[in-house]
Image (tube, rainbow, N blue to C red; front, side, top):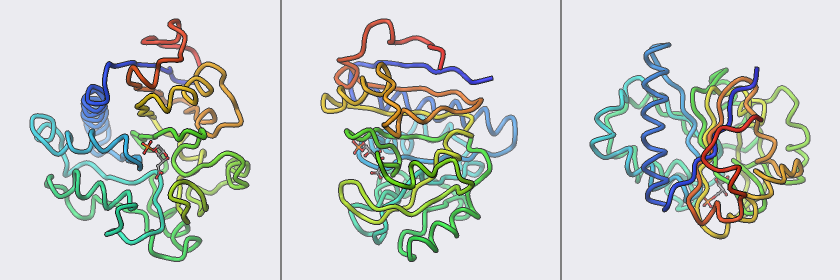
Length: 247
Ligand code: 6PG
């Protein structure tokens, strides 16, 4: 039985970060209570960064059992961690340097290995089921590093959990979780902010354009929450907003 889909609209990017940070805490607390640990995949790009900063600050930070949280990444650019394009590098600056999380709980994608080798290695580290996966939305409808028309996107029904791709802005070699992993997650949370995302948010959420990778994310039994700020939601019909809709 498919889980539910919620579309939440909040006023500003700051409110989006706050709501997402509280959802992180809620889902992690529930996972730890149920299974003694939690596995979370963070999104890359700029939208989640405000949330990452909040997670590293009280009051939220001290409410999270970091020793029981394992952090992974949904995708990574194959660049050095010191690069401003590194998703792990940004998360380290915004969050990891500010929390007391055991090193063994950090699972960055091996972006400096040859991509095929990095993908194979990370597949061995990825849990069967994530408790929580954060995703962003590109203006072309990509999510993680699953890009429209990319041969790997079509091949997603394969057994691979991590694949190497090339694409995005910056155009780079990347590693990405596949739909097979995303759609097994217990909770998927999309974070979408800004006027420039309004059109693609409409294409995905109202038009359900299956040519867009973000529209192909449908947790088999998990829940999916879209959190958009007012600007990103500005083209969505009222009946879609702030409610639970069947998927
Ligand atoms: C990446 C991201 C990517 C991102 C979207 C939205 O590594 O590029 O994972 O999927 O989430 O491109 O990016 P912004 O949040 O910067 O708009």
